[in-house]
Length: 189
Image (tube, rainbow, N blue to C red):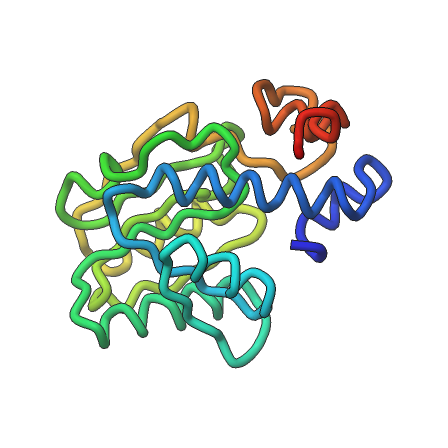
């Protein structure tokens, strides 16, 4: 968690960034219930945290978000999983994810700027090529169309709110927002 959210350096100190990243990841993991959770990570601390919360862990052999997702999807396919919900860990307003997988084919949840893809549902055998980064939503729509699979865009304001830069912290409320503004330290034991 200490290396998370580097774009917030200068706004939050290292400890606050790590706490924010962990709290957001907890929110996403809670939102996944009752679905089983697998965390793709390359960090011992995150792995221990995920396992302590009952998640399985996949460790990619090299860094990079696209690679981590590819390795995670492949590992789940080998375990017999047909469909995966890929949800990023920076969704502080996430309350549920099960509705994202309520249809056949591919589901794309765009961020509030219609640029990123904080949640993506894909069949594990689709051969989907992930393209996270700027413009990922358009790239993922093009990939769904290239594959010829049915797809839908699910606009969910809670899942569309991800934390990428300091301006996102201004719109946070509740416990995670308190943490981002520095008020969390007073309420954590």
